[in-house]
Amino acid sequence: MIIRLRNGLLLDGTQSKKGDIYLVDGFIQNTIDPGAKLDADYDVANCVIAPGAIDLHTHVGGGKINLARLLLPELVKHPTHLSVEQHGIPLATFKPLSAPVPTSWETGLRYLQMGYTTCLEPAVLPANARMAHSEMSDVPWLDTGGYLLLGNDRLLLNWIATGVPQSQITTYVGWMLKAHQCCGIKVVNAGGIDAFKFNVRQLDVDDTHPRFPITPRMVLRVLAQAVEELRLTHPLHVHCSNLGVPGNIESTLATLEAVEGRRIHLTHAQYHCYGKEGKHGFSSEAYRLAEYVNWNPQVSIDIGQVIFGQTVTLSADSMHQFDNRNHAKPKKVIFSDLECQAGCGVVPFRYRHDQFVHGLQWTIGLELSLRILDPSRVFLTTDHPNGGPFTAYPHLIRLLMDYDYRMSIFDQLHRDVKEISPLPSLKREYSLQEIITMTRTGPARSLGLADRGSLQPGMLGDVVVYEQDSNVETMFTTPKMVFRRGVLVCRDGKALKGSDKATVVADPEIDSGFESWISPYWREQYGYNIDMIKISRDELLERGRHVMLAKLRLT
Image (cartoon, rainbow, N blue to C red; front, side, top):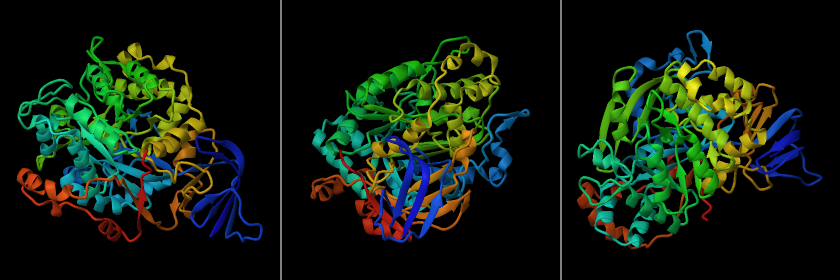
């Protein structure tokens, strides 16, 4: 099949020019043979042609998702629960989801309707990996993958405490990636989730674990080193200690230093750059984190932007979620210990524009985006659903591109926020090219997805056509056309047909004899055989009718 898109503005983070592209048998080409017959020809004058968008941190599969659905049945199918208007004040124009955690079908559809084609689940627990892959395979249209959750698994903590060689830990990390078919390594509150099980309520970067003679710094260092030695493209994906705690900028900077110059990705960074200044004992330190990122090219972040309205927070960081339980709205929570590998806390939450802390959190997320100079190392996320729904992305794009619009919402915030926030002084407005970089080119490069994020010849035919509009929120909310592997699957917000799906996996080289060696250690620690948790490539292929494997490009 050959499709031509002509007279469009080609934007992919590396080029900005008027021209044509061809989608030939699922891939992008600049030219075709003179005698080739076009199957479709679209004039897309006054439109932007861009690669499919990539969300590298959104909760779309795994046990926490289902717990959140079970906890909040009264919020399902009632769009008003995610109202973006409070007290008659319009705070955004995006259409709410049907629930804080929607069904797999709605998740895929709503992402597709915005032009997203690839999404990564950031917290796949080893004990729950099979369910996570099953749920992700049920999300239509999207290529998916997951980061494996390590850093609180009891076997690893034991090994760090007893001083096993780094080579053993690196092999363990690589084997775990292959066994659970994931594409990166995530650590949440390193050592802190396990410490919580011993009644510890806070574990800073250099605090000693109550059971093992180790610190979070040690856990971070050995995992970052394992990622480097395995030559994984995506850096160690880190949820810091002390999420949401006033003054946590110090532990955040200590976390970045703990990896000793190795690559690191700091996730939902908005929650990790707070100070303790002012009459509320809560202030922004976004400038310090942004300065660190600007001066250290081995660091990348995603934002975790807060969106005003009802949502549900879900996290393996049971330490933080327990501390947050008194703020639950509605008043109910779920906590769970998971196989000596992690924890889980589900806490409903409502962000209010007229509440000081929530308003300042909103400004801090925007501060980070505006202060970090390289859009290829700062990524647009809400940590869905923790900060708010992913459907808010077009709204966030408008906030970044339109200073006056940004200020119109800022003016509605709590008066104390307006007194202390530096946001009015940040007059930067993102360009379309920078938005494409932070939502396509940058994430593809960070993940090692060499076949997407660009409009260069030979790239995968995941292409989106946006009609240019003075209101960029309108423009990015409903693309004119969305192509998946060269096939038109969505037009003007209406899904036309399904598409093949890929699972993003890493394939590090490890010692073939490691599995038999680790088997008795695993059984002793967790009480079941490793054969019960291993996921084969064939199983991934069988799990969805159109699942294909996408391989990471190793560094």
